[in-house]
Image (tube, rainbow, N blue to C red; front, side, top):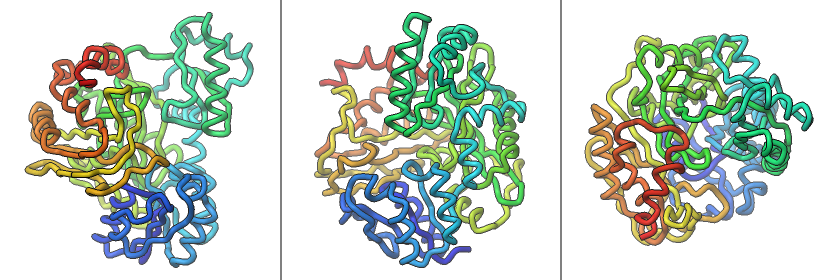
Length: 456
């Protein structure tokens, strides 16, 4: 086991890794920017090192400064968390070339899975179903138009080297294709410094299903079942749960086995997530991408399996073998996560940073609150708007929804606008409770009929 680990991240995920290190008896060193100076979670680490100004490019995305901090702190490994440099193959390679173990997959796996076109080639070879798409990036307008016609509208234009909805456009007919193609390439260039895009068939009413994986460095891969991440706004997940309320057990097994095959095909190790689109009408599922890191919603899986995924990340990176057999990873009950963002849902989810004047954390059986925020904390403008994750676990989905409703009534984050009112309404919505919705339902139906209530 490592003696010291550097955490190259901030906020909630930094605190989550600090806690895991503490329980493993590992010294934790966390980096921070000037925007995060004085944040209470820094006190929980054994050491904190400032690496630059508030803008990410000068701190959390600055590889030389992070490596310098690791050298000063004399650590053996670096945990990247999620976001920032977590899926940067260059960072993973530099960490290892400088003598630090990267707590994540190899740089080769990150590179192959990070480029969605390459990932689909690997998936096809592993006999994992893929959405009909272009064979690779399509950089010619003429070729793109021809391929779109061949694939069939509606078609999705998607950045080859990114995520989060940037560089993504849905085009429903040939007339609007060229303008959307140019816009997607421009967005991809601005966001990822790579204008390449690929095309795939767009599914109108899909569910978003993802499979949590763990893989050691000795060829052993297991899945930890699936999460349903269908409640989305502009391709950003807002609610995640496990198990999915619409996936039959036989299909669930096939999806999870497909994810394991794909991980083995690229010699993947550490934690990762394989994402799929699922069509409830036909019970077909299609691979879309791999997230070569731990994800925001990993606690959902922890609640239904009893596993500590962060500890397993660290153990695997230290060379330990997975002692888990697939048959031993059972699901227990139902878990739901609501992402609490510092956004005003009554003003089109406008970011609303400010100071938390009062904070009341919900409790009771089956309630978990993952957050670095305390009363008096000022939410900075430099980073993602998420201020915490509220999770519940219960025997059934119906009980979990009622428990979440109760927890959402108890939680208080005064002084800032948050998405708590949105989640309260969502938990009371009959269609959400039925489990019958798709990835566009939130924007298409739920928001229009609740806009006045959210604005009040």
